[in-house]
Figure 1: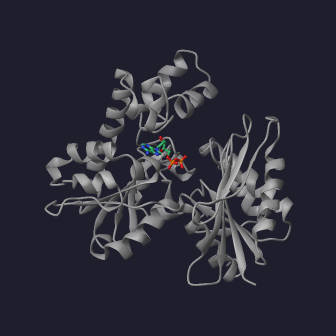
Figure 2: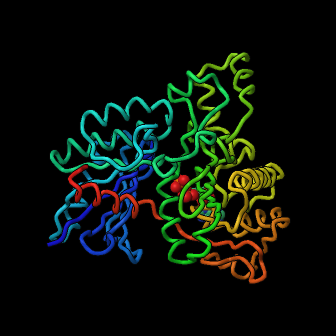
Length: 394
Ligand code: ADP
């Protein structure tokens, strides 16, 4: 009998999970899946490591709550442990604030400190924490480990974390934190195995999914990133605006928008969706002939290139790029658009390798290297969860 770890990544309408056998040199995936469409058309699908569907279920009752889905998920886990013993649950928690620089065992005190951070990540943190509470009541006594998207960015220089606001606000936590750290940590580890020389140098990782950010990594350590105080900053995203002149927010308020309306506008109605007026899904936009869809794609690429310039300056140079997440891994046209605008750096992609979209995609003569590396946040959560459990939560 082996031990097993369940990882959870809870959003507003979805719950992603993965189940790993642990105890060997690295966690071994048994199953991964998600419950999506919570509140509309709920649907569970779980697949094995080879992609074969292990379980699938649809519900007609849109009113079912997270508690009901969570019970279904735990029943699925019990059915598929195959004699293994569930020894811990690892949670993706978006915001760890200034205090949490590494994964921790969750207790009442930790949970209360994380609740305070909910306004800083209103789209994610309340759902992440709701899953922790459900898991604690569904499996009392089982260790629950919080793994933070902010933790990889701890150790940034003070000049990187500070806004040009009066010091008192910085002391109250109004500073840049950075997100997507679980993904960046995974990519930094993978790159060390794939290209140790590049991993020792200055690399910008482009995590381009529904949420999108860039991270400047020097010798495996995050030195700067595009997201700041919240996951709204930096790049244009699926429905989020990215960096914005703060004067726009003042103007919107003067136009009579309430804080809630501004929040909805900036988090849920902007980005690719807002500019295209069509969709937040990059596949839809790339296939569309609508001028507004083309403009949204062009702006997405432009913002990436502009921020790459800023991060390269903050690292004092650039040796390579890594593309990852839904768009970064699957959209050759976006990678080609970024590379074209970065021609001045000496970056050239290999056309065929870029279309294939796996591994090294830069041309042999390119001055910068470019890789496509699939991210796996669940694997990092499983590893950290075991480390915390084995260390007794210290
Ligand atoms: P999340 O941030 O929700 O984890 P993902 O990393 O799954 O998001 O990325 C979702 C994005 O990836 C969507 O915009 C989707 O359109 C895009 N995407 C997925 N597959 C492709 C593809 N083949 N071509 C272009 N974009 C893709």
